[in-house]
Image (cartoon, rainbow, N blue to C red; front, side, top):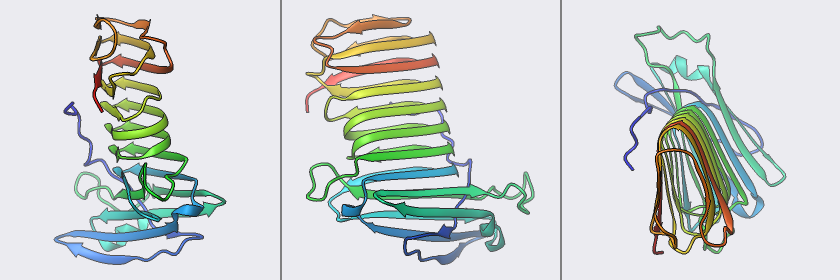
Length: 266
């Protein structure tokens, strides 16, 4: 699915410290100021990771690695404006968290200077690697897109204005909540999936042998199911049906949007 809305120019912030070692570096491109805040933690000591930003994209990749690596990158019109963006990080027990916010009383001229923003790149041990993938991953952004690839565990993604694209998941469960944005979820394994979006289309790719209990509720939209071990399900409205044994649950709610579920070979 090609997302119908892109909100990568809506922005926000970061800067900061806590129980992890942080390093910063300043660079300038044209009139833009930037600061990178990398964080690293031993993956064996991390059970859960949460990332929260006000404005900015979050990208997560599962790789063959023994560490959890976060690269938080700030952008602002000038170096002084970078101070308006703060980041707080904490590792408490097995939970690693990063949270950022923007000082709304900053000195930027509305309509002339771009709002400061934060983008986050997160790398965790991928499914099937020697180091265990975190049991729980949570991403939250107000204005920005969320993308993830080749991760497992309990996955939660929340975006107010932004698209969510999750690819090659081996997750135990997936929960997605967005107000304005399209949602794409590609599952390697069968799992419970819950998606709630007000304005946006939803595309789910699941293994062809999947036998879900399907619940779809919409005000303006339709549902199409293809490639699963069942007769084609095609309706212009809400539906509740069970395919096969109904071993897991797929629940999608949208006010304005379609649902497309496709079964495919691994």
